[in-house]
Amino acid sequence: MTQAFLDGRARLQGRVAVVVGGGGGIGRAVSLGLAGAGVNLAICDIDGTALAATAAEARELGVAVLAMETDATVTAALASFYDEVGRTFDGIDILVNVVGGVKRGRFMDSTPEAWQADIHRNYVYVLESIHRVVPSMIRRGGGSIVNFTTIEAHRGAATFAVYAGAKAALTNFTRSLAVELGSQNIRINTLASDSTPTAGNMNAISAELREEAMAATPEQHLGGRRMYIPMGRAASVDDLANGVLFLVSDLAASITGTTLHIDAGTHAASGFIDWPNGVGHLPAPLGKPLSRLFPSADA
Ligand SMILES: NC(=O)c1ccc[n+]([C@@H]2O[C@H](COP(=O)([O-])OP(=O)(O)OC[C@H]3O[C@@H](n4cnc5c(N)ncnc54)[C@H](O)[C@@H]3O)[C@@H](O)[C@H]2O)c1
Image (cartoon, rainbow, N blue to C red; front, side, top):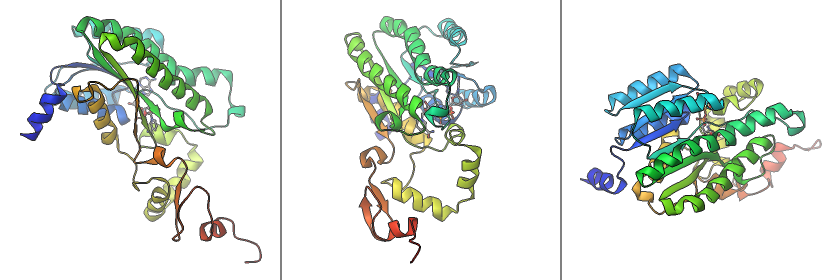
């Protein structure tokens, strides 16, 4: 009964969605979430194995699926994918641009070639993707687009500067396009997540830091999460997929040009840390946390 009530308000069943980067990680959860809601899919991914597995799972949920191995950062490859989408479906209602990511590093150690690649991967391909989809949405009488950004678009993200800049550009592009396309009933929003366990998330840091992180005990990880994340746990890929389902459904019929933060509270905290040893929330360490982090020589 409740399910039917929500389905009736969401009105997702039978729609057509494109998911760029829909094979693995967060993209897989988004694809399967949409398929579970009865949405037909066109998904592309650079990882053919993950793509085939996700496509098979989605088909088992009873929806039509077009899956095409594609590097979304290659303009011609993305165009070929969209040509195939055009031949397979009679229109597009939903677009989710998931592809994005970064390798942590200091700006002064980076090269112009690396900036171009980061900007294309986190901003330019989204412009190309949306430019291909909007005419179809106009013909359908409307549509909904979600672009994946990050908490780093909303704070000073040292060692992620080019990525943070590209995602901030994507955020304000999204807001601007929402104004431009509003009268055509096309909604466009960003979803900003913080750290969510995926392959892309682990690849963002160096192998050395990854090894150190993996060597920490479960208790240490839990302690760290409790300090940094107000809810004490990271948002899961399914939490993010649920946010996409909400934004692309008619439950969000009047929501456009905004950012949905799905991060278990880290954007709200904006640097307020829940320090251990009974000190509680403060932006900077004081008392016991301070003396443990920086033991004085004569202590
Ligand atoms: N995971 C996190 O902690 C996190 C945090 C903040 C923001 N985000 C954002 O969420 C999005 C997804 O992140 P993720 O961690 O799931 O990433 P991921 O690297 O795990 O990739 C998701 C999917 O995209 C595919 N993909 C990667 N590059 C591609 C390309 N060039 N062409 C086609 N497919 C490609 C991957 O194969 C994978 O299936 C990104 O835009 C990222 O910036 C992620």
